[in-house]
Length: 458
Image (cartoon, rainbow, N blue to C red; front, side, top):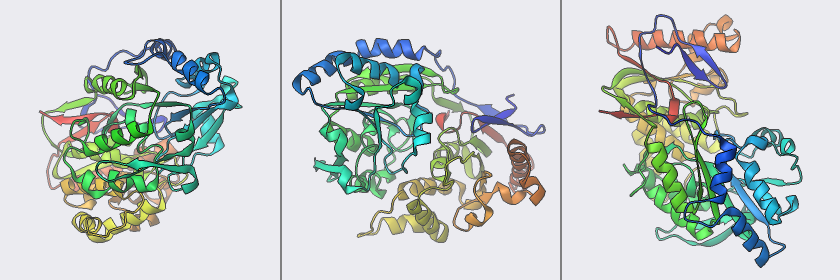
């Protein structure tokens, strides 16, 4: 049995006495050479001319035009960095086609997430390492009206606001990672544009209570998923000249590169992940342990792990999340905190009643709290959630659901080296969960791949 669990860029050892089933992604494809595969896909894309041909045509039409490349932020493990990363072959093609560094913008499609600072940007992209420091990198700001332009209205009534730099670009390129997504079915593709580079008003329906209440707003469901349909419509309104998406395995190694037309290249990537990201289970478990994974940089992002754990836990069972909250705000944005406080005060049913009332004004990031509601519908009580992290102070739990693993440590244990403190915390939490399960020998499951593996009950 696997005796350790992912913790940030490290691992923590599991308690020696732990008797648990371990499940993860099965039959993941062999990792590929990212550089070689990227070059091949840029030259021989899906349902599209090559990137070089498109770039030359765009420059011929407008010699002074700019190319904008949309990238994900650092909450996604996209292999962007440096001369061995995904961006370098793209930038080389653009330069060979005639684009200069000054005529290329890298746009961070962060949706409603906070801006990345220069150090974070360099650590993620590595333009200095590539020798391309003159390329401008811009954070998309979804609530900055000066950065947005209205391009129309969707069939369902969303005001489509798009980043102005992207809208005005002669050449529009979108990159990203395709993995299962607990709202939109799968990430990547159209999500690079919506919600990646849209405005606040565009999210009113897209991240609103009605869309997220659909049973089709779930992992690996594309057809009929209202978020997918809305995102695709907005992305097609905005335009995308070329898409480059990657897929990865449980070790964050690249398993595929998919380039070409927005819709078709994304569909190919989705079919790829469907072949290996599911985690078959034969029963629901009394206690489920799950790491928050790479994405779990704060409490907001950790909801993804909670949703996947809720697929494998019995009603009224317990979930233990192990998180390394490395973000400078380990909880999340102010809107998220306000929405969490409403959940804490009114409970899942009361929270849903509030956000479904006519005239309710959507609060930033309330959508993630709505996903927490789905978790607590399974657990029956927020005290059946254990949140193991060192970065969130105990005082913050007055506004957070669940039991802090930190509360189970004494002061001396809280001051132990990080990995050691987390190992003690996990052991204490497991003991507490078992002793309060009401069962002599509760069944325990470790979902080793965190939010990236999708439990499916057979």
